[in-house]
Amino acid sequence: MPAEVLFVCVCGSEFLMCVISNRPSRLEPELAQGQGLLPSGAGDQRAAQGCDRRMRGLRWRYTRLPSQMEDTVSGEEGEEEEEEEEAAPGPAPAPAPEDPVEPQLTEASQVLGASEIRQLSLHLPPRVTGHPWSLVFCTSRDGFSLRSLYRQMEGHSGPVLLLLRDQDGQMFGAFSSTAIRLSKGFYGTGETFLFSFSPQLKVFKWTGSNSFFVKGDLDSLMMGSGSGQFGLWLDGDLYRGGSHPCATFNNEVLARHEQFCIKELEAWVLS
Image (cartoon, rainbow, N blue to C red; front, top):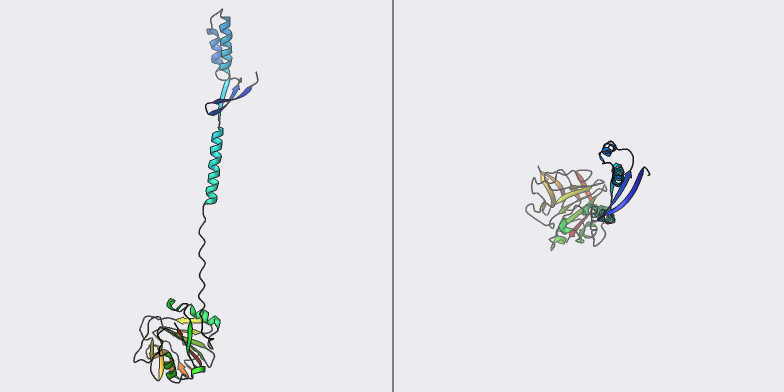
């Protein structure tokens, strides 16, 4: 008989692999002792018992084999796990930032170029975003006169953007939350701010320290104040002006010098 014999048998829904070995085992000494217990003269019985002893002396090893159903279920589970991994959604892509709305001007500006206008528009209050810019006053068309500026502003209530270029080529100005008008005292809201391109854009927002936003009379126009200084002031002829640091906006001097001469001034209504 070979040293080992391999059998595969079916037990119910399970497959068993059986290995029979005739190699010596710990049972053989016990079986040898049992040979003397057989009665004499029982030839057939001895033959049967000898065969039984030989069979019992063999070593049996069983190994349970996976069934076809288990293979199928295992394969399906593996496929489901792969499908779940493939179907698992990744992190949602971040929404692309919205591009700023390009301001629509009723006519070309003689003070700022397209790049400066785009930069400045990013600092305007959201309520004016998308509104057209209407040129209601410019010195090249309406003359150098503050009274003329007041007249052109009549009938307008929306916010105003003042753009200036001085004799040195410096560009600066102010945003007023309301239309420019004659007044006995200061008016406006915290949306008002000053700005300057020197050459990069600098914006000076309201600090909250006071409410001296805008004040206009026949002789001058003032924006921002504190300690007797004005952030921006223009004379009645719209020819000379000045700029000083003030508490309202904590601004720098907008022009290259505290005193300047106006070359071009524009007033745009944003409504």
